[in-house]
Image 1 (cartoon, rainbow, N blue to C red):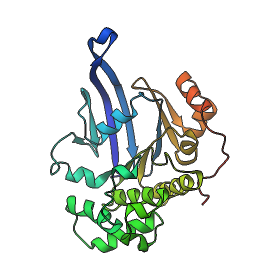
Image 2 (tube, rainbow, N blue to C red):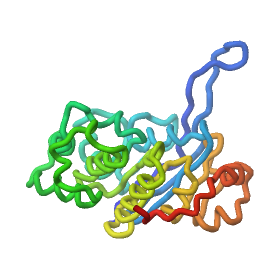
Image 3 (spheres, helix red, strand yellow):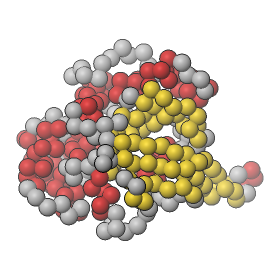
Length: 264
């Protein structure tokens, strides 16, 4: 069976303050469904507050929706203990926006990559697994002895990707993984992610405000607005003939770079 991660009719609300400070329920997701399978590259876009972060947290089993379900290969996924979710963390991994938030500056890269193998109880030749993960993100073994503070921003982002890859997951959930990188480093990271999908068959949900990156990397795009899916389809078609105002507004913000993801 091809690995498949699905959100099915997710609805989520937050408690917050409305007019004159009155407590009220604030909507975050409305009956939202989305599926990512191995080999897919799906862009998830929307303005701030559209629901992207809430959806990610639900898919990562960090928040329980008010209604709806998250399933992986038809097995329900919900927040729980670390041990009860170990099977899921092996199959679905997260790539953060800012490596500084996930890479302990006191650890060298070898220890950073070894940590998830130990936490998830993965048996086997850890040395080989770590070196294979480095190869997949195009980093030399020499970085294993270095700490995050001794690496460039692009190298640290690739270390974060390698850390997600070392358990051999089927699906990656990437949250703004090229945000803050300059153009050459951005393109290098995009090329690495593209190879993971096209060469290795991983499924990728790529959350980004950078629609230029989405257009280069993702075969399909889902547009969120107000916690709802307002438009989705093949990325090239969607960007060429956007039908919803939210999509058109996002497209108008795309920088005219004329760059290619494969440039180094």
